[in-house]
Image 1 (cartoon, helix red, strand yellow):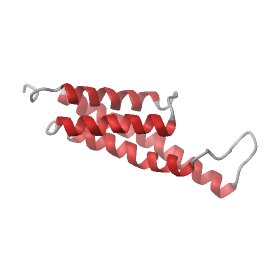
Image 2 (image 1 turned 90 degrees about the horizontal axis):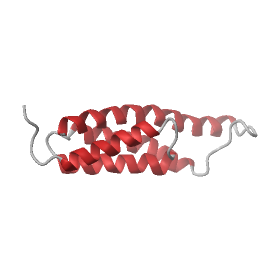
Image 3 (image 1 turned 120 degrees about the horizontal axis):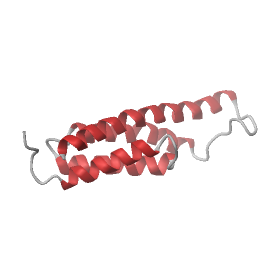
Length: 118
């Protein structure tokens, strides 16, 4: 279970990084060029999007990286990452996989009772 949490956390973090790069870049693009009606409009809270774009993927990667040695802390980081992505980006076609992978990785990390058999 710890190995599954490790893999799911790292993959969720990498996909979350891609979503985060786009989201952060979009908010900066609209600030730089200005809004274009019905094409490029600024989000309601760009600072929230920017913070989640940075923090949530890092939490997923860190949680995945520590899943083998510290499963409870890893589970907390992975669940926090999933919750942050859901809160910041919402659930959609590009966010469903990192949210689901981070959430499942967190559940698996919490459920790991003892070290994986080698």
